Length: 535
Figure (cartoon, one colour):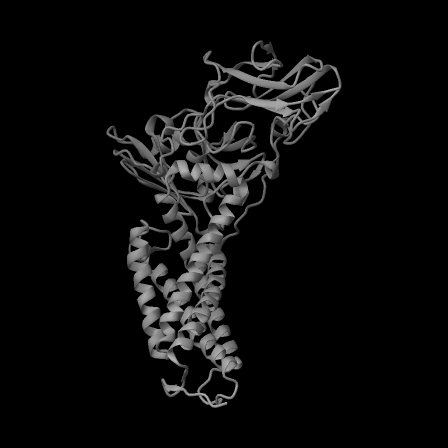
């Protein structure tokens, strides 16, 4: 069978327009897949935000908070990976349409035009619209890094597009002459060159940023005798709070909840890290990790809870933290009298703020240790905030900067409508029993945890009749004013009992809000309920 070809470039065969564009879409999707792999490689090596993450965060800023909360409630832990999968699919589709455009004129020259056009559209247009600034000027790494790496990944896309389109053409028309078609060897050579370029770019960035000057973790200091005598994370609770299933009073680090907006969390190296304090201060400061950890340290138990935690949820935990008082650092810097807020910046470009009175709380901590060991990466190494009384989203991880400002700065989540003040709601939870257990008739031991931020817990009560009557529970004093409190109760249950409920009253005498409400915008309210079957 004879095949009619249109003449393209001297090195690229050209199919009839319809087939060429059809192959172009397929080639574009494949090339976009190659580009995504390249992006992941570069992201892992450099530690700097990538194109999909910038797009994802930009999209998050325009999604109404109520919708985001509803999706999060429905999908739970699957929400973030599914969201990034959706972004990746979107990028594959964009690649497909760019490939279709290329199919109309499958030449290297046209591929170069597509690469440059995409680079400018994303770097200038999309990045600016999403708040990252021209070529990521507002992001870690700066515009030069983001411009060069964005160009590099689009060059990878362009090269993969040309090669893939040619290979699809060869497969569609087997008797095409070899002259001008891209060979598999050429494809592998181009791919190898692209991989070398990506690794080199990431290595240069890490070298310039000081990442090769230190590890992303440090060794634990010897444990002092008084620290060794403290409550061991994950240890069995003392009687009478040693119920099976009751949360340990101190959460093990590996069991402590983690929440972040990132697809890949930053891995901050000690050698290149500095904490910068600037803005409305008399004496701007920069502290290295060694300088920070050499400052007089304080330690204490602090409970953290995510504002997206559902009633009865597990996005909270209690740990022993060590660090420097934030107030001491700010007083040393000399905060101006017209200051209103402290803005905190993280290595992943996350920003949030608190009012100055919160930042100057006498027990607000800039922590570098958790449960007697340096912070794990997922918990904010090398330093994170712990500010009493406010939800976890305000307690910034991977801290790199503190800027004192006079305006009402709103952070990443606040721009979606989440509460800016974010004080903890009073919460109480059953740890045992959970699910829908079958229990024998007679006394039933129940227990859990309760927390109200820096207000403490005055009392906990349990009901076995749908909230008509309440029985007081035993409440263990917290390990600190900012730690959750264990509770237990022994309930007489018979076959008429099906519904258990728990409520708490905070240290100021205010009862837990009983009206059910979703986490958005100010944290979930309502009572935790457990259904049992008595036999």
